[in-house]
Length: 99
Image 1 (tube, one colour):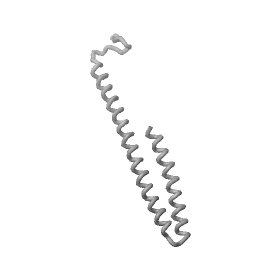
Image 2 (spheres, rainbow, N blue to C red):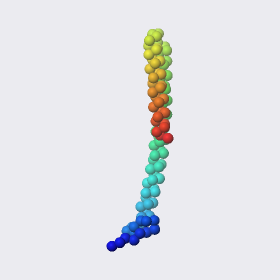
Image 3 (cartoon, one colour):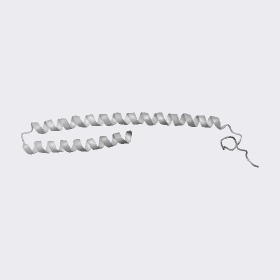
Image 4 (cartoon, helix red, strand yellow):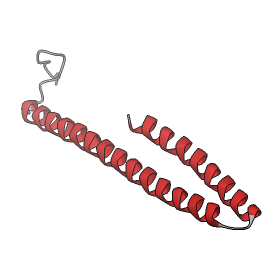
């Protein structure tokens, strides 16, 4: 028994594929909205992370500057700079991934 082909190269199996195609289109639209929403939430999370880390680093620098021991100040300053550099690289990479 041979199946006849409908226009567009799809075999005629007696099913109405229009409802399936419409459902697939709705699912694609939903997925796109979900992806965009997730990207916005991810960017917001990166922003909050960056601001929080900046506050902690600023606090560490102030504590280090207020110390009367030079080595404590130097250590705090060096650590704060390290954290700034690492977090900047991390947030930049995260933003590139979320674009």
